[in-house]
Length: 494
Image (spheres, rainbow, N blue to C red):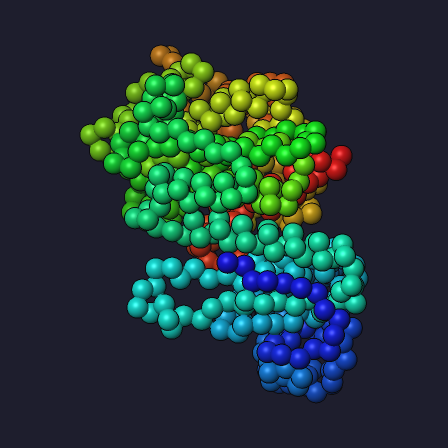
């Protein structure tokens, strides 16, 4: 659960005060704040003694004056962008486990910068300790109350923005919780049971297709992937239909609750983080809840195809042929290229439903789809592919506002031939080089050319296996949710 947040311009007292620490090109340190008064000379002297540098992600703690503790968070030596402030606030919040409240008095000139500080502080105030058992009582909790010190504290628009930040953080934490939950406790059925009450509480329509219905109605991708598991597959569909909506989107998220690779079994080291292979499904399902709670006037259908890719006598074999929803056939050459199969089913169905009462303005799929994404863009930058550059450019504008990192990638037509199959309409794998792009081309085959479509490959950024940084903790990150929310808002404002 994300902490509560409010803005204040009152005298600062309480547990913790967070200030900014910046260095110039000559490595001179400067303390930057929201305008509060303090004894900077003595603090800077103490910081020099401690060897503080003001670098990004650096956090230094000192005894406070009006507060119990003073925290200096590094702002680096570059421009103070929204994301710099967001990450600095997040790094400080992460360092404050065990503290109940803190006032963030970081520098800002406007409402947008104050909101970025709030988002970072809220996102950084997270810990996953559900399965700590007997040691849980010894664990330190994250902040439960956050104040943003600002001269804009009386601004009603800032209050609205802080409320949005709180909603955004709460649903990001939900995605992180789901991604961090082990497969012993999260499978397609329990995933659905997590979202059903949350969606219904917000008045959203929920439809769930069982394995019997999926098979009867021709969802060959979801059935083909899920048939090897004792935990049956599901298709979760959540609909948000506000009054006055003039735009319509569909979100589709890959929901492999655990991926062994199937009969193309992964090595043990490559399987450890595969509980995160449902990050896309969690992001799109949580994004529609956040959109509904904020009452954004846009129609959205969220689709989460859910399956567990396991090894058994029922598992799909290499060279099996399956029929995707809508009738197109696929030769499954590699059962570990399974995410694209369940997404294909959901993409076709999402377009079918979305275009029933008008025309979709666009469809976005989110997936931890390929290891090739990590090779190409690393673990912090997601890929975005499209059949419509104008639609992609609108999305990238929202990326700038959300602070997440996405990079446009091409879908070279010459790679499409590698997906040709001699026995089916197409194969599920093709050219190894450019594997991320080939996977995108596979999905493109299941989207009408005139329907604006984005494919977000979040394979690396969805799960942080390295050190924490900024507002990002180890484990599930909740990536894509913030941009999906901003994208919906931005489409409405056009």
